[in-house]
Image (cartoon, rainbow, N blue to C red; front, side, top):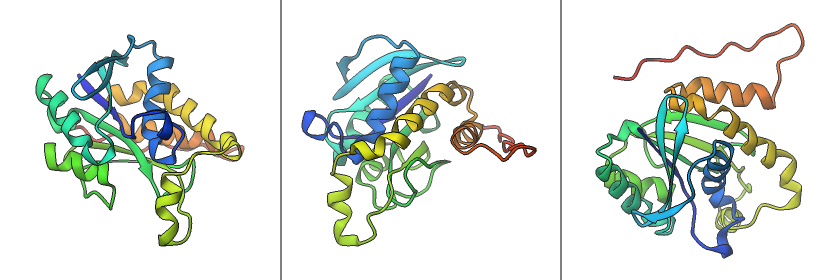
Length: 205
């Protein structure tokens, strides 16, 4: 089983914030793959479904971003999962809009939601960082992150979320790097005559 977590802040006020792109990604995956209707549990909203061979619990913590770990830790303990079974989607300032990176483990890099999860389950969970771009100046970061996506973002944001949902079954197969490569190559096709080669997956023990 996989615990698929999207990070964001609850409520209509924050729904379109760049900080909520993790919620948005999980919402699209849940719709595309016909998960069961959401219900309240573990201080969040959960929905059950399937990605590839794995049963999946999608979780959107409703604790506000800075306390996301409370919800994630509670769900992980209930389902008797390990950190490697937790996959977290969240916003990344240091990636351009529409770019994606995956990794397992590491630090929080200033992200309070990730810092909270680390405090509750340790660092060794899977992370899928979704680029929202940097505003260029440190003093503008808070307004950028808590600002809404605009109509001018839709040409990259909608295809980005759609292809994430299309390729999400690869996450259920533990092929996170192949997932990332497929998203990249779909949004940035190789010139004719060249074929992108996905990196081989390393087995997880």
